[in-house]
Length: 476
Image (cartoon, rainbow, N blue to C red; front, side, top):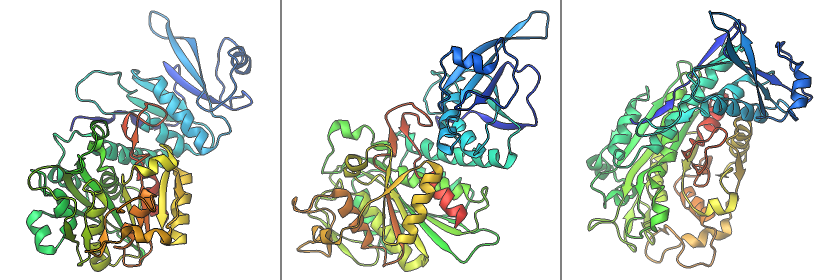
């Protein structure tokens, strides 16, 4: 692979070493620091001189003389603000520190009070980069957290690496990435993997996945990952991810500008792969099965056409009115298979599904639709804890006539504009294949990609969903 997901190594040291070249020390909103540090002025006076406000992410850099060697050297102390010390404030502070020291070899960090895992996780995520070639400023090589809880830092590193993997998979160009490639990456996750190729998909009746993949020279795949802990609870969760490795829109072709980001249309599938690979390291006790419905949606002489009718796994028929509403077609097969064969206690799917959700919620909050209030509440709480924030959207049953077809059981989009609400009707379509089980749908089309390098995010794939699902599953 082309990337350097997280170059930075997190270590824990018992105490601050003597005269580190680069030392970061926290200060609170009242401009006080609990760690003694010798500077040319008392810390509160120095911060007041620089008109510091104590806000999270605020950094004051101070040069200091260091002893040792024939020639005196100059080190630097970074006084960093932690605001109110909340997890969100600590994430902002950790990310700001990591970005400030890019290109340096080592930063020793006096860890703040509070949620050290959130702080360290953000610092590591801000060090993520994806590039083809060697240009660009590299991240700090080592973050040494002084006096930190080792378990908290270990968890932060595991979660950050999982997010980085999801970003990495989604950022990989589609000249490299196709459904078979994605299946190979899933096989490297450390859990048992089963893969259906095109012949097996045909034999088992996965008509939606096959229909979407018909136009591509790269055949589709269904990927199943299985995690069973040594001492499992009696719960079984299924995660379903959209794995469209490139989405041209098919014969319902996308505009050129919209197509430029479509290598990341498998971001939901990337999240599922990353989550399944991290569960053992986090000690999750719930049994989890991941399904990634992978295809490349391309226009060609063999591509499905608007007005085609396809038969999904389990026998439901769907009239395809728009070939660019393909994610729901592949996921319907996976959801129907999960219901019929896997018998889960709950199903959660995740997908960059609709542009409509970006209009509704923007680029900082993901959508959750759910048929079960308890499941919705758990996911919303996990989103608040992890900063993968979610907003519950309504499943409006009055809109279900939008899915009616005159010749099939369902249509994949509304014929006309009576109802609109494209994200809601897409969720209603998916619900048809869940068998009435507790189910939630995460539409991450708005939050799955970032247009800025800011905070914990880098331009490109965000890995949104990894943190919320890991938190939920390790608490389940």
